[in-house]
Length: 218
Image (cartoon, rainbow, N blue to C red; front, top):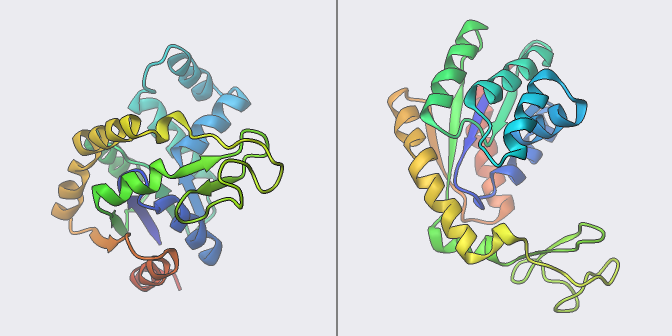
């Protein structure tokens, strides 16, 4: 099974990716994780990425694709994986297809998690985290016992800057401009399945597992 999870920030694809990889015991490829590991390990691609990141520039597609390609070589056969948060643009998707086709491991499916804009804003803007122990909460779905302090250590909870409404609106704007065109890209290749991400975590997971069961390697 080789699958891409697609969707706007806050649709829950990361949560579902963790559950699916644990169930099937397959690799999860997250470009954020790859970038952090490469920078930490001071690999050649990591050093190149760090130079861009330190100057506030986007990491070039060539570097990101290079990291994904390196990761693919580490996955044992049969090469099964979930790509979470990548590709983000049509050029990245085209480059990914070239890499996968070159290795004879084309994608099986792309799952597009759909959640309304209003629900995404509610999910993201309600998140709170503890700056000391990193525990996370949500003011509606998983509130702390006290309104403003961590259940674990008592530290005052904070809202991440990118979870403030203005930042969320900007993140969604970037998604709509750069990533949403991937829906048409993968629809044209008959690889896309839509999934209602607005249901409960468990209901989304069960529907996702039904969809993915078709592509499980025997």
